[in-house]
Image (tube, rainbow, N blue to C red; front, side):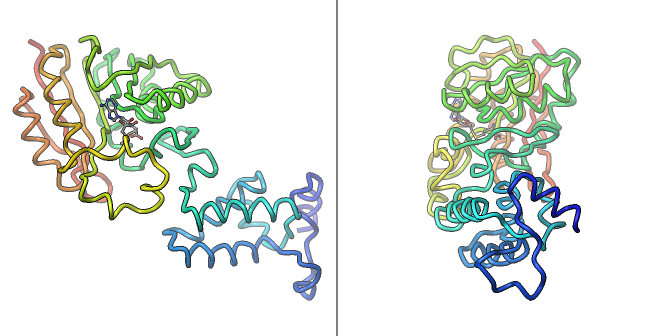
Length: 305
Ligand SMILES: C[S@@+](CC[C@H](N)C(=O)[O-])C[C@H]1O[C@@H](n2cnc3c(N)ncnc32)[C@H](O)[C@@H]1O
């Protein structure tokens, strides 16, 4: 413990470790106490994963990895760190800001992506879309349509360097974020601004898309993290949640080069989307389930004309 105190004390983030009987003196607080109080605050506020959130936010305030806060529970927090942690907690508990926006990072597949309110926080289930596209032929040209933070396009390029990957979005703000992620990660992606396939050349062998799929009637039930902070244009898709997918499927037949189309969908939407895909000329259509067993990605293939 002594060496950890010394090491941590050097950079001013931690104070000294306190003897047990000093708990009530001087308004200082240990890592363990700060976590316990934060856990209670976040649980009362209705946050779904209060312990995890508390650890991630405290690690962020300290500028250390999360494992470290679990190991160094007896150390006291330096006053500026304590204040910074209180501010982060307020954002989380009162404003219900997603942890990923507060810390500015989210992991996706093998990548650490910068994230902020310009784009949706990438979700774990979207990793399935990447897995589906990993089966593409060598050198295939693939477009991640509605790329947001760039998550799917970047993960694909990272794991399949041979693919020619592009990412498009209707939102120029999202594209700024995606392009910045691409530069920071050193991944070569072409970014284009487009409303679905309008003006997009017919040069892609595959389209992958996690387009908005929340139905208007579901809006009132959205968690505050989503409804208050994430861009509504990334979420809402008309009365039945299928407006974006329907519009895309009306445009796809003109893109004769496309052999594979993979669409992420909401729970219960897969059968309807599969029918629409068949109507759009895809001969072989299947649904892939995510880790929760939900039919999450509908995949259609067609033979090149
Ligand atoms: C559900 S988010 C997905 C973001 C990202 N692909 C991900 O999985 O994290 C949907 C994205 O589609 C974009 N989008 C919505 N309507 C669009 C349209 N008509 N054309 C292109 N992109 C659109 C939104 O701006 C948003 O970035």
